[in-house]
Every structure is written in structure tokens, then in C-alpha cells.
Length: 116
Length: 114
View 1 (cartoon, each protein chain N blue to C red):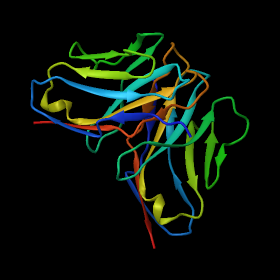
View 2 (cartoon, chains in turn brown, green):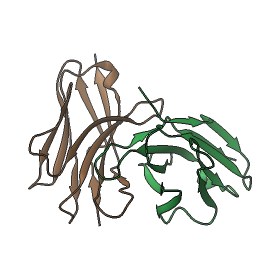
View 3 (spheres, rainbow over the protein chains, first blue to last red):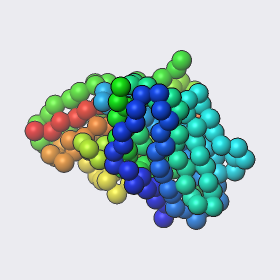
């Protein structure tokens, strides 16, 4: 069965510093996708970044990068130069290859607080 | 930029009442999903829909739930007889391809069952 684990329930970071949010996953499928979503206090789910299991390079999107270590089954999100607006809940999610649906399985999330 | 929209943003209902949550997925997307998030918990998959039929559903999605794509744009989730434990944020999501593309989420409908 597929599983996503986020072990950090909450984190603080100083404005302008970098922060790493941890995510480990478990799957026996060779083909899968890993996502990070941001959920601000308003509640919407905002897509941040995607990494495919066969992608050779780590994904980057602006200030977001994904530190993908396949052998360790980890997909940590790195936010560089944190801003106050980065304060939110962050969810790691995995999509498997199976079936026609490829539903997302989410972790429990990490609440990030950026301090001025 | 195209986006998934959901209505209403908030719904308050009494236990036992029927509710219909509405979603308009991104226009060229083919796969549609409903997820829910109970307050303070993680997001959970409910159901996926493709080619006008359910392709997968979770154990949460029992006989009280149904989905429909009544026309070319709307995608609805109906809860026939709401329970207190149905109180949650309900997210609709859509994607163009099930295997290669990102799922884009709507802003959610916050349902409160009293």
C-alpha cells in the first residue's frame, strides 16, 4: 500500500532564510509522482511542485525545489528566501500508476510559520 | 489562467438533509475527483470520475454519496442524508491526464452539518 509520511507537525523559520519540509513515501510501484501543495489559512489547495519517479533532475519552481532522493524514498520541499506569505500548511502527496484514476494520497501536513 | 471553481464556498445544513456541492473543472480536463478534509486532518480521496462513470471510490464514499456530470461543464457531489461527521472541507480537482499531469484543486466548499 502507498503511504506518505510528514514527521514535522510544525516549523518556524526566519524571514529570508531557507527551510526544508520533510516527506517520505512508501510504494512498491516503480512509476509514481510526488507533489507538494500549500494550504493557506483561507483553505484552498495551491499546487507548488511535481516530481516524477523517472525524472532525472530535481524539480524546481521559482523559490521551491524538491530534494528527491529515490533510494531513501524521500521528497523534501525546500523553500528558499522565506517570505511572510509562505506561512501556511504544506502537504506532500503521492500519485501512483495504478488504475485509471491515480488518486492522490496525502500526508498529514506541516504547518510553517515564517517569523519577521 | 484556467481554474477549478466550486460553489457554494460555505454550506450549513441540518443533519438528515441532502446537499449538492458543485464544481466546474478546467474545461479541457478529463479526470475529475472529490476529496474531503475534516478540520485539522489530512486530505482524503473520495471518488474519481472519468468518461461519465466512477473509476474509483474510497470506503468513505458509501451509498449516501453520489456524483454526476450533468452537462459538459459541471461536476457535482451529492450527499443524500447528511451526518454530523460529514462536516468537512470538500475539494474538487481535475486533471488532463491521470498519469502525467498535475491535479488542480478548487477553492473548496466548507460544509457544516448541525
